[in-house]
Amino acid sequence: MEVYFLDVGQGTCNVILLGNRRAIVIDTGRRAAELQRLLHHLSVDTLACLVLSHLDADHVGGAPAILTAFRNRIETICYPNDHRTVTTPVWHAIHSEIRGGYLTEQQLVRLECEGAPKTVWSSRGRVSAELKLFSPTFGQNQLAIRARDSNVASGVLVLKVGNHRVVFPGDSSLDQWHAIRDLRGSALPCDAIAVPHHAGTMWPSHWDDATIRGELQWLYTHAVCPKHAIVSVGTSNDEGHPRKEVIEELRGSGAIVICTQITKQCCKSTEKRRPALIPLILPGRSAVVKSRTTAGNSKDVGCAGTVVADITPTGFTIRRLTQHQNAVQVLATQPRCSPLCVPV
Image 1 (cartoon, rainbow, N blue to C red):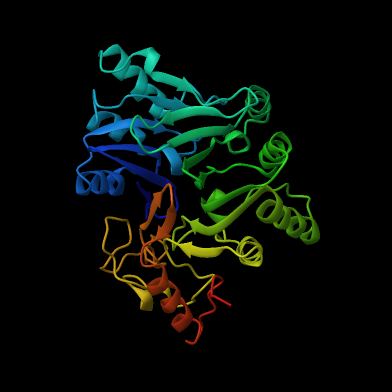
Image 2 (image 1 turned 90 degrees about the vertical axis):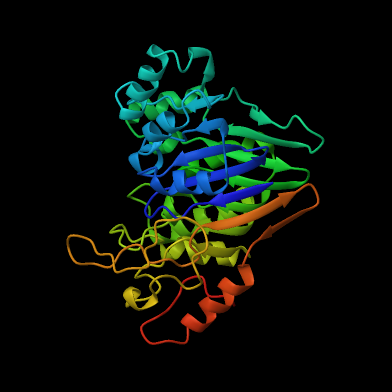
């Protein structure tokens, strides 16, 4: 089984390739172009499940285009419940598909579990594999609706194949992870995590640095313990992602950090790194030709680009990991470059 962490700029999109031209898509990024190119490249014909972790545009903006492109070829849609549930473009697209007879209401599954994790998908073959939803619960959804904040009730999903796991946490909050940890009674070790909120994990604005550091350390050593941490981030983002404290605590936990695009947090002269630290070999948003924002800032410069992991009942590997780590070490020796993820 293959897991793709797509290079979609400042957004999130993951594909789990199931075989037999089938896949699961978790979020779509802001636009569907990169996702559609990859699905075409992989010869995907059917989506066993389309999961929308929450309704922010950088996660679900491309969903209407996917609904059209895979009309009559999507088996299940996991849809979130928040204060914008029936007002977003993606809901209008889903409703239009239902009215047109291309979807039924029975194909819609609420992204909500009742305490114990809920199975969203499981394999039908000899290989034991399942995708489970660990959060949000009904109560968390209601609190998110009252707060008008969909991030704090993001879908937290875990793919398990044999004894190996990949965590897809959307933009989940620390409160959600405290609840997951309390329910499990132990940490959730995993081979890889798609780091929440583009490595800008959500925390209250009144927290001081010591509190932030303490909570991040708890998250990555006592709640979820990843061996690899993949950050979906855009070169030109103006939110300071990835956050230095997040990357440092991930590295402190022993995780190997990999970013889809390079940002000024790691190198002040991002344009000199175009198109990417390592060759771009899969569809993604990173551009070979010069690409700039309206303010003139460089954008869409790849770091690892689209990241691919192979997961089986007996193993987990990230392709081209050594090549990427070597490139980061070389970058660290160059002027005006201080990559946050440099191996130690």
